[in-house]
Image 1: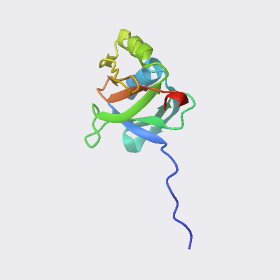
Image 2: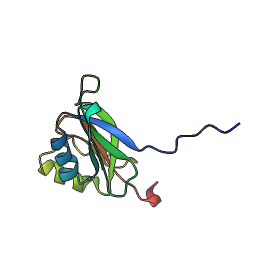
Image 3: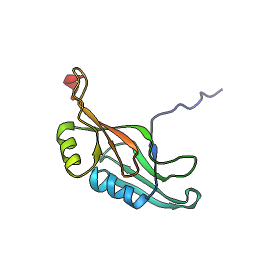
Length: 132
């Protein structure tokens, strides 16, 4: 009898958006992610678009929002950056809807931002190996 296959990773997390072109402009143009895939997908009523941080294995799929998967949700997505304070300043100066930078003892600096549809994403400062 063969062993059951196991889950080996997380590939893509869907983020529902109302305007895919506007979403690409935000995620690629503002956040600096790269567009990896953009293909028509009639079954979704739009396109299958994947964006990711350069070199990252996990991507975000910017999928068309619908009645079953509305936009404007807390996604649970946690993005990482080498310097949360610098990124927070740049994004807020660019007009991105972001909460205050959180600086708590023993926890990496972080903040929450919202995309143009109001989807919430957290940005957390990536700690070096010596800090873990």
